[in-house]
Image 1 (cartoon, helix red, strand yellow):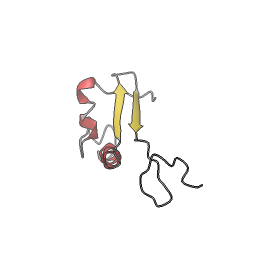
Image 2 (cartoon, helix red, strand yellow):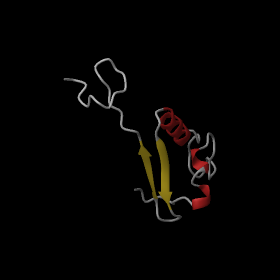
Image 3 (cartoon, rainbow, N blue to C red):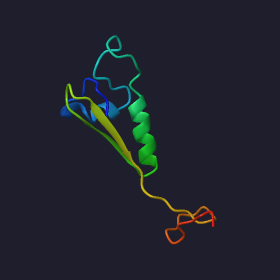
Amino acid sequence: MDNGIGIAPEHQERIFRVFERLHGNETYPGTGIGLAIVRKGLERMGGRSGVESQPDQGSRFWIALPKAIFNLNGINDSRNPHPCN
């Protein structure tokens, strides 16, 4: 959780789009690609990301990745939970 300016609910998905910014570069510097890169990477791994926020109350960004278990050959296999054994 941060103690920043927060994000109104209607803008919370918008901040994950490439080059989308809620404020001008003069107010808050940046390119507007960071959150988009994070979300795209997570989606490629089967994960998700999001934000919980209210104006003037800060924001909490979260990520979720699926559990992956691999066997010694590197193939996804939920029957072998200890790939180093």
